[in-house]
Image (tube, rainbow over all chains, first blue to last red; front, side, top):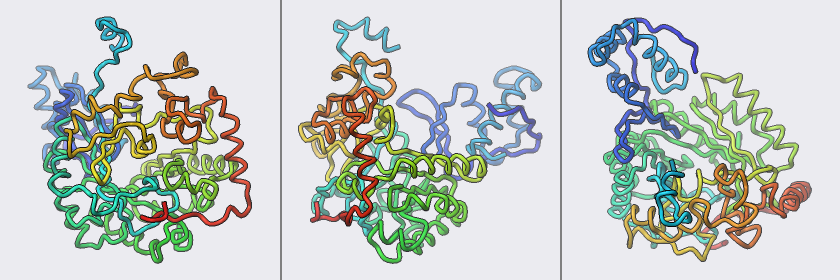
Length: 95
Length: 378
C-alpha cells in the first residue's frame, strides 16, 4: 500500500496512454486495464475511476462523490487520495 | 467457493464450471522475417495457404470479447506480415479488447505503425534478441535487425504508445542482460521482460545450443534485482527464469484452460501455444466451433483442466492448486506422458536427471550450430 500523500484540489487526474477503464460484462464488474495488468475495481473504486476523464479536477470529483455517497468531504477524501496515489505509483493514473 | 459447489454436485469428481478466459493469444500467422533459434512456434509451421481469412479472425475477436476475454495478444510469427493486420486491429479494438501487438519490429514502417496506432493498438511488445547487431543477427538469422528494432522502438515511444521489450535469454545472449536493461531505458520502454527460454518448439530442438549455465542464470537474477531497485519509476522489469534449474514447476498459463488460450494461424484452439505437441488431444477449430463452446466443452480443454486428471505425486500434493502439476507439454516431451508431474518438480523421479542434463548441456564448450526456424527445416 502506498504511503498516504495528499492530492491538491486543482490536480486533474487522468488515465495515461495504454490504460483503459471499462466494464467487464462477463464478470459483472469494472476493470482498469494496462499492459498485462488487470485491476479489479470494487463499487466505490468504480465510482471514482468513472469520473477520471482528464478534465475534471480532484476537487470536482470529490464534490460529485460526496453527493453520491451523502458523506462529507473530510470523510471520503483520504480514501480517494489513497486509491489514486496507489494507482499513480503503479503508473495506472497520472496526477 | 468451489468447495460449496462440489458438495452440491452428485459426484465430487465433477469440476466446477470454469471461469471465462482473461487472455487470448492470436497467432495470426507463422510467417516471420526472423528465424530465431528459440522460437516457441511448433516445428511444423502453418503455411500461408492454411491461414484463417480476415472475416474469420474478426469473428474470433468478436466471440472472444463476448466470452469475456480482456487482453488480446496479436502475435505470430510476425503479425504485421498479414496485409489485413490494420483491419484486424481495428476490429479487435472496436469490440472492446485491450490490444497488444507482439512484433519483431521488422517490416513495420512508420506509415504502418501510424495506421496500427490509429486503429486502436493499446500496447506494443517488441522482441529483442540481443543488445547489439552481432548477437541480434546471430540469434535471429536476420541482417541489420538491431538497427531496425532500435528505430522501431523509438518510433513507438515517439507516438506515446506504451512499449514493452521482450528479451528471450539463453546461452548466446545471457552475458548481455545488463546491456539489454540499459537499451530498454535508452529506448524509453516502460517495461522489460527478461524471459529465459522455455524449451518448446524450436527452443526444445536447439536446447543444447541454448541452455545457459546455472551460475550465469544466478548472475542474471542478481543483475535484474539490482536494476529493478535502481530503475524504480522508470522501468518495470519482469523476469522469467529457466525451470530446468527450479525446484517446483511453473504454473503454466495460470492453469490449463483457466486463464488464457491460443488460436493458431489455421484456426486450432489450444489451451497453450505449445499444446499441439500433445497429439492425442482433439483440438477444435474456430471454423467448426465457437470459442465459447471450445473453451467450456472442447475435449482438449477438459483433458487437463482442474485436478481430476492427476496421478501421483500430484494427486496428493499440497501444491496441486498452486501449480497444477506444472506444464503438460513439458511432462510429455521429457517423460513421455502428459499426465505425469512436470519433471522439473522436486517430487518427480526425474527431477535430478533434468537438472543434471541442463548442467551437462550447458557445459559443452562447442555445442554445434543451432537450427534456425523455417517452414521446411522441422
